Image (spheres, rainbow, N blue to C red):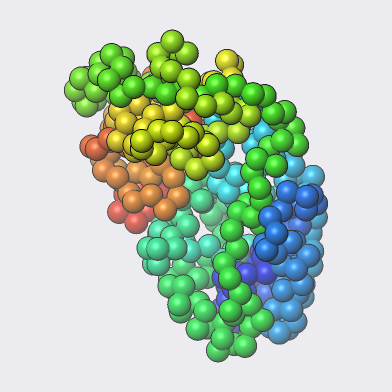
Length: 391
């Protein structure tokens, strides 16, 4: 009998994952990851970790499986939280959920499971895995297109996928809830969790202020008619120009006018609309650039502002990751792929091309809010092929 350790989060998805595995004849062990100790930044109304742990325990008892709590808070701080602070400090926007899967769930947690002689670890992700006759593992989108979480798994390796199971990947959310109710699981009607994985919903400004001090600065509005923006959008969107088109916009104070003040450029992200507190402007404002060196935020009105929309992005060579190494690009080679630059974003048609210094992605259509630090993931049909953080 194969042994599998399920990451029980206290939610309905991982609960049903454990239920299905037991029904399939696996020896199932439930384990809750405690990644967080500081509840001072947890928003009221969201479940703190202790409630989630209790729900996970209740489900394990209902299923008659062993249950453990593993404290990974030190590793989570070192690998996720410290990384988040460092990225925000540089004016970049990290994706902790992608990193949590790569560094915690399918690394530290997986190691702990293997020490328990587990054959696999399983999670409640809406994603699928197949293995071909050559032993190559393929990471696929979940059947539920509205819940697909393959993007969050885009940094996994073949070695990690070999040990991973995604029992609910073939199901849609209503089917998962129906199974939970049929099995009488404690979590059948529990609302979906939000926020950082296995942490809950946090107040990001309060969280960041733990290490990043408030620092008042100016918000500079950029006119859409700025000459540098016209120059960019006059460049033909072709592979010959992809390097030029991938460079993030860079503004200076003298390029616009002051419209408001902020409490620290490192609290903001490209594309952000809420929380700018810019009054007196006729249309909604968006963050175009975060300049943490000079503590400036550059904004523009409307989502169509030319300073918010680009055709291309770059991923540096050392950060390019292939989930399926069969599609590793040689220098000068390219292929047509579907690309996602944030979770829940519709897949966009693009050309992925390898240059000496990295991988470049040229989109067929302008992309709003290409954000340094976020992950771009490229797909062939349903399969995640590769990914990397945007430069």
